[in-house]
Amino acid sequence: MFDYLQIVPLFTAFFVALILLIVMTPLAHQFGLVDQPSYRKRHAGMVPLTGGVAIFMAVLVASVVTDVWMKNNPLFFTASAFIVLLGMLDDRFQLSAKGRLMCQFGVAAIMAWSAQNYITSLGDIFGFGDTYLGLAGYFFTIVCVVGVINAFNMIDGIDGLAGGMSLIVLLTVVGILVATGNGAAIMEPLIIVAAIVPFLAFNLSWKGFKGNKIFMGDAGSMFVGLTIVWLLVDHTQGESAAFRPITAVWLIGLPLMDMAAIMYRRARKGQSVLRPDRKHLHNIFMRAGLSSRQALIAILLLGMCYCGVGILGEVYQVPEYIMFWSFIVLLFVYSFVIQNVWKLIRKAKRVLS
Image (cartoon, rainbow, N blue to C red; front, side):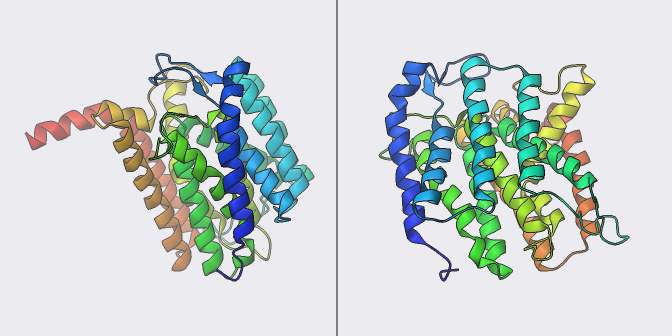
C-alpha cells in the first residue's frame, strides 16, 4: 500500500477543502445557499450548504495540481460538475423531483456512454454462469447510477451520516484494492476521503471546529454518490476487475436498502416515491430514543457490517449467487422491519417487561 501512497495529493485535497469551507461560509449566506430549520430539519439557525462544493473543488484542485487523475478524468469531472451544480440549484431553489431526476439521468449517461464506464457483467448471480448485459449494460448502468446518487442523497439526514457512510465505503474499497493487488488505484478513493475529513470536522463540530456548522447539501451527497458508483463500476468490470459486482452491492447495501424500503412504503401509500419525509432509518432510531450522535454511530456500525459481509464474501470467494440471494432476502427482511418497526418495538418491550 505504501508503495502507491502519495502524501502531497492528500494534503492538497485536505487543505483546499479546509480553506474553502471557511472562505465559502459568508458567501453561502450572501447568496442564500443556506439550510433553514423546518418540520423535517431540526437544526438551529441558518446553516451553509457549501460542504459538497468544497469537497468537489478540493478533489478537482488536488487532481489537477498534483497530476493524480481519476480514470477518464475529464469526463468524471464534467459529470461531477453537473451533479454539483444540480445540487446547488436544488439547495437554493428546491427544484422539482422530476426535473432533478431527468438531470441525474443525463449525468449518468455521461458516465455510461461518454466515459464508457458501464456494467458489462453482473457475475454469476443466478448460478448459471456470468450474466453478460451487452448493450443493455448502458441502460442498466444509467439506472444504477441514478439509484446510488439518490440513495446517498436520501441517507443524508443527520450530521455526519452521508460523509461517514462515504468514508466507510471508500476506505473499504481501498482495503480491497490493496488486498487484490490493485494498490496502484488507491489514490482515487483516498483523495475523496482526504477532502471529506475536514468537512466532517465542521459538520460534527469536532474540537477546534465548533461554531462553524456546515452541511454537505444535495450537491455533496449527490457528488459522493456519483463518485462511489463511478469507482465501483470501474473496479468491478473488465478483465482487470479488482472485485466482483455483488461485492460492490454489499458495500453500499445499507443506503440502497434504506432507499428501497422508503420508496416501497411511499408507493404503497400512493405517495410520490421521491417525496421527502421523516421516516428514514435515522428518524426511526431517534424516535426510539437515541440522540443524533447515537443514531449516527449505530447506523455507521450497521454500514460497516454490510461492508464486512462484502469483504468476507470476496475473501472466501462465496459463490456470487449465494451473496446475491442473501442480499435479496435481507432486503425483504429490512423492508418488513422498517414497515412494522413500531409494532416490533412494542412487542419487544412487552416481552422484556
